[in-house]
Length: 217
Image 1: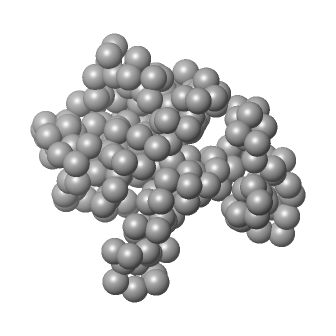
Image 2 (image 1 turned 90 degrees about the vertical axis):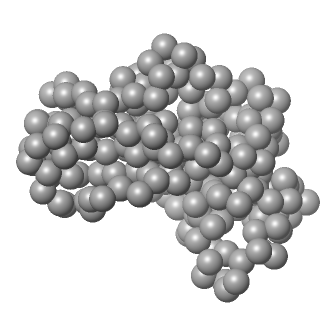
């Protein structure tokens, strides 16, 4: 990401001003951002930001999309959104960048830097760190994989988190790294095929025959 670390710092600064609250409704209230039900998910900027959410998102227990819209407000206020517009070669690239930044921002709001640092201080970059985040932050496995993989958006980080089920790759998340497999690929001997990976067989509550792995080059 062109301004990845700057954006991560902007999220961290704004979130820290409000005590790193991870409840969306409490955080937006503290930030004086209005939230209302609407026909689509968006963040608009009037005299003050207003987030609109589709009914299924507004009333859902799953908060990632809500935090994604909140991240749009930080991207705009930080000036990074404007910088990305100047750097993009075409509109589709700009929109893709914006969505990628706000996905990261959503994960950081759900699992703020102090929380991630505490988990990493105990487990390092490992499958155990991913599992710990699901427990501490109350997020699903894929969101925790995303957060640990991307870390603090360090420019020199090269990490991949992946999930297998039986002999097949179910999910992979990478940052600045090449991963030789695509979702759905058959990997019958993951410990041999990806010999440098840290592996953890997941508890049954995450599904049968699932193994979580992490490569940290």
